[in-house]
Length: 464
Image (cartoon, rainbow, N blue to C red; front, side, top):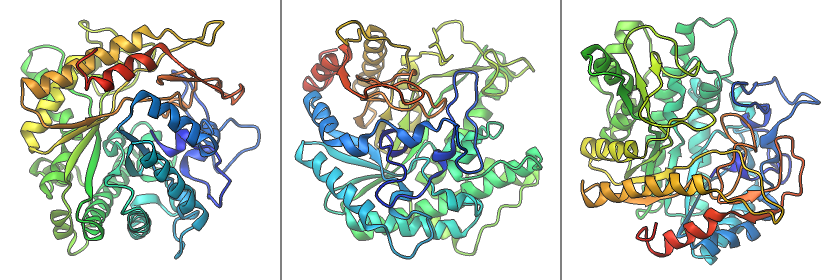
């Protein structure tokens, strides 16, 4: 999970505004808007979250009841450094995470902590976000502060969440949430891409510094990257479609190539030169990236995609160039195609390419749900989705020899959807009584999947 979707309390405890605090609510087919500050009368769902800031102990007890062995969340950057560029952290924010991580430990859950999960302080975004090299220093200061503070409570760390999302540069929300790049209507597409590539380079440097620094703070730390994995299939065996899919897949694999190998792949350097991008790389950057490679790879996995090389409309009106509907698999109400075998496929692809342990930290399905008169949700479709995907993880381990170090479902509890800002797009095993506009009791109710997943954990995946 992530602080900006869970916590709420956006202006409590000394916290400053973050980039998600000025993202309006949207819907399927209705984009979220990035407003210039908080505009009165607009709906900002992430400011509310699900009030986990105040309810974490009772929520954690529900996770404990399911038998969770770990819990993934993020540390809200603007709760620790409200503007992002302060010299000293906000002690009240640090004390909140003191209590949170201690509660995880007391309830038998290993914390898995993401350092940057779309929560950059808004002030830093207004300074250019990660396009501005100074923000690297701000991030390193934040990461160093929390790793030193929680060195005895947290062992597993992730640097940047789904860092490759911003390769969908035509969708403003991704460069904004990944890198704090505020859209400029005067920018040409080439200028937008130049900014994104510069931010990505700076994030590679920042991640490498933090990995090295973390290992100095505690040699037992395990620090990984986090990549959104959507396998891209050629829609046909036409060689042009095959090559088109191969080239598009590089936009995901290049991040693993740098995080694991510690150097830029030849195809990316060639692309920058060919397309006229001038990436400012300071002296010593290449050595920093080489010295700060990750210990493991973590991924999110929800769906796969199919593409054709010919110019055709995208079947759902957005997505990858030449994306078409895969006729062999079903789709969710939001158009995400359900492909359990694709999870095994990407696990094999990544392990064969990198030989690093893989942590599946996000896997789940968003659904419309209405409780019955007893506040019970019979989410059989979610159980079927998770069962089929966990089966494929088991095959990757048993048949393919992939080293899978862990699996965490997205999401264990209903939260604000990142992409649409909705509550009605529900992922959780626990129902939260709240709507898209913050109305409701915010009471928690166990869904049918709650008890099913408890048995899955207890049997280590043997009982599905």
